[in-house]
Image (cartoon, rainbow, N blue to C red; front, side, top):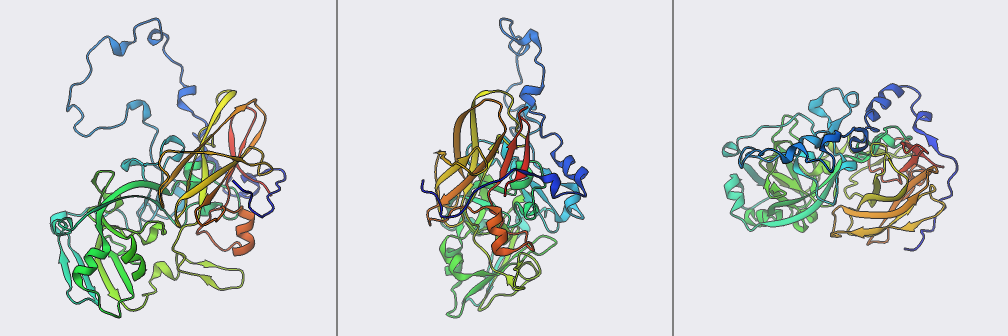
Amino acid sequence: MSEPKRHLGPSSPTSRRSFLRTGLALGGAVGAGGFTGRAAAETPDAKNLPPNVPEWSQALGEGVVSRPYGRPSKFEADVIRRDVEWLTASRQSSVSFTPLHQLEGIITPNGLGFERHHGGIAEIDPAEHRLMIHGLVEKPLMLTLEDVKRFPRVNRIAFLECAANSGMEWKGAQLNGCQFTHGMVHCVMYTGVPLRRLLEEAGLKTNAKWLLPEGADAAAMTRSVPIEKALDDAIVAYAMNGEALYPEHGYPLRLVLPGWQGNMWVKWLRRIKVGDEPWHTREETSKYTALMPDGQARRFTWAMDAKSVITNPSPQAPIHHKGFTVLSGLAWSGRGTIKGVDVSLDGGRNWRAARLDGPVLDKALTRFYYEFDWNGDPLLLQSRALDETGYVQPTKAALRQHRGLNSIYHNNGIQTWHVLPNGEIENVEVA
C-alpha cells in the first residue's frame, strides 16, 4: 500500500492525563476493569484440568428449550454494552457503547450494538404503529407493518456510526478503552424495503427534493434527507441479523442510510414528509454541526469518512504473554469499500500492510489482522485505513489543523495505544 503524502513523524507519547487534568478520576473509572482480562486473571480449578474428568462431563446438562431464547455462556457475562454515566444528564438522552475489543468478525450481535437515544426507548405495539408518507406526493400513504412487508425486500450489511463517535477524543486522549473511544459503531445485516419503492408507490411530485423522516419516540427525532439518497440505497428496515429490530434499535421500523451518520437513521419511523427544501431542524442546526476556525458552521456532513481502530490489543484487552501476538482491528468508510489498512508499532514512523480477512463490503465494517512477535518492549500501536476513493485516514493533528478545536463530530483521526512493558495499554497521542 502506497504511503500518503503527509508528514507522520511522531515524538514521545502524550498521555491522556495531560489532557484531562480535571475529572481524571472519572476518566480512570471508565477504564477501570480494562485490565481484567478474564481468561488470564481467573485461577482455574485444578480438578477440572487434564488428566482429570471435568465436572461438566460427569452430569447431564439442560435439555432443549430450557433456554427458549438463546443467551451467551455465563462465562461471557462481561461482554456487554457499557455507558459513561457522567457523560450526559440522563440515560434517556444518552449513549451506550459496543464492546469492540471483545468481538470478532464484522457482524455485531443484536444485543451488543451501541444505543443512542434522545428520549428513551419507545416500546411500540406493531399492531398500532403506522408509517405515513405525505407532502409532495400524488397519493399519501398510511402503511401498517404488514403493508410494508408486502413490498419487495432486500438484505444489506452496513455499518452504523454515530457522528459523535470518538468525539470525546477531539481535544486529546481521554477515555481509556476502545469501547469508549470508538464504540458508537456497529455492523449488522438489515432486512427491509428500498425506500424508493415506497416513494414510487406514493408518487413523487416533480418538485420533490427532500424528505423529513420522523420517529415515534418522545424526542420526535427528525432530520432532512436529500431525495438522491432516498432513491439510491436507503432502506426502511424491520429486521436486523435475521430477527425483528430490537426496541432500542427502532422496533418496528427504522430508516437505514448506508454510510451516513447515525443521527439520520431515524428509529421508530412513523412519518416521512416530502418537501422541496430542507427543514433545518434542531438536530441539523444547533446539533450535529461543527464550528470551524473562521466562525462558519460545518453543516450537512452526512457521509462518514474512512476510519479504523485496533480493537485488540487495546486498553481493555491488554497483552498477557510475550512472543507471537495477533493484532486485530476494524476499518470502515461511508464512501465505499476499504482497500487496505496499514499498521504501525512505533507511532507512525514505520507502516506495515495489515491483512484484510472475511468479506470486504461496501459501507460495512472490515476486519484486519497483523501478526508479530512481542518481546516486552513498549509499543505505540496505530492503524490507518484507505478506502476505494483513495482517501487515507488522517492524523488527529491534521484534522485539528483543518477544523480547529470546536468540534466533536466526524473525528476519524488515527488512534494510538501505548503498550507498556507489563502488557497494560493506555490511550495516548503522538505529535
